[in-house]
Image (cartoon, rainbow, N blue to C red; front, side, top):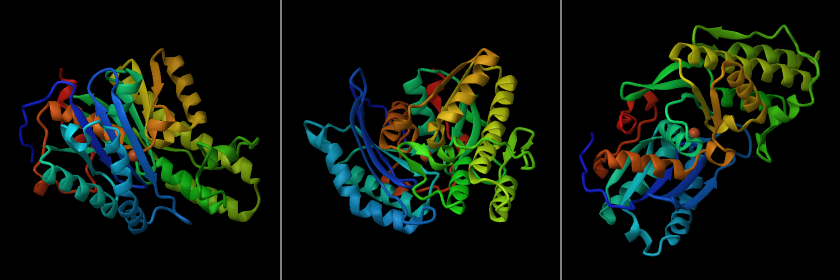
Length: 346
Ligand code: FE2
């Protein structure tokens, strides 16, 4: 799939397009000190329930031209200043991915720019490394669709643990929805489950805690919690508190084991769920206990954005990873460990 593109300009500028789930984002970055040129976003928020992929993609189609134009306006010479177009081709929701991919293919072909395929999960990791300054950390990637513990080894990020059923972010949203706490699921940067849990006092010990080897499982916890909720026998705040403690602690346990296994001295939290203060506190305590460095991506860049696609695109571009527009297919299930990351070999 890869072509080789060897001519790389000094002070190179890359435009990145993100459209894997609820956010249509365009980022423009430049090599060097003043690296951030543009960060424009439009987020689709469902009126009820979870993300409807078709509705989200329609939102993208309506707002994408304005978002792209706003980002390009930040460049003196407009799109002519851009050396390459990067696009997240997966993993994500098919209809959403196709909007970003179609626009990126069109821009690359029309303006004769190299097109760089970017894996969304790798992009979460790369913006994390870029901002935190950690070099080869144990990665804990937590979002609506992902719960992964990974680390670099032999040319790729390898997965050391994941969820056996639902992702942590999805778990939190579904519970919040069933409990009548959302949508919206995040208010003033804080998940409604965290807000509710902060008011809890009593830990409900009968809820299941499931860690199997290096993996976690949350579906049993969700079922048990919803059963208790419907029984009306417990306070909602106590249930939120207990559910949060169990879910977060299971992630901490597998992360800690990952650190023991890999003997890495750094742990990095990336992805939208990583914005949770309660979770960050748990991570920082665990890291202190183990004597390792801990850093989390700031909430603004922990959620989906175009800047992370542009930054990763720049790394990939420098290593000759470009794709012909007609071959830039979306890959809904493109796994983190399928992608070469040659920049870490340097
Ligand atoms: Fe994401």
